Image (cartoon, rainbow, N blue to C red; front, side, top):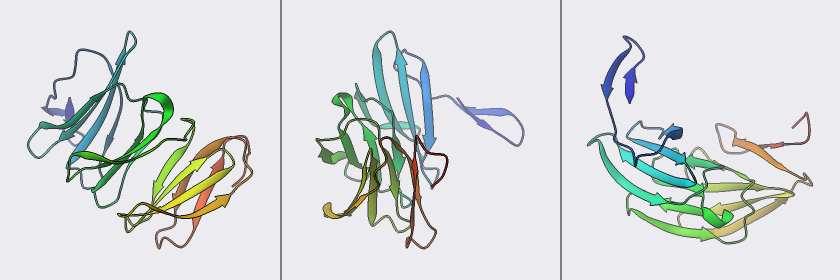
Length: 168
């Protein structure tokens, strides 16, 4: 259910696939809501269009260990079964690119202009130029595990959080 914070009123309910909802994330505009459902070995993801309260896209089987919307609401990136990473084009309603070599332990970050996707993995960060998805740069971090990461507001700096360290 989606509720109003101001007056604690349920605004509307979105019907799930019959298993428990685990994670949710709103798109930056608030037009979309991604929901990860899981129970009894079943994993399901639904991307809701909140303007129409309808399913914009749905897939069984993704492993939602990491996911992120782009600031312009055009892209949604997530880990899938088999630990690949998929970049979903929201306007086209299709996966634009699947990155086949990921281990399912990384995190994603988009720059503020939605022109660069950073995929943090153990030991490195790959930067991809959007929309063409050409690899732009690999940054070697030396971290044995990948934590989160974020671009600065102007997109000129990228902070990475190596999971086993207590500093950036």
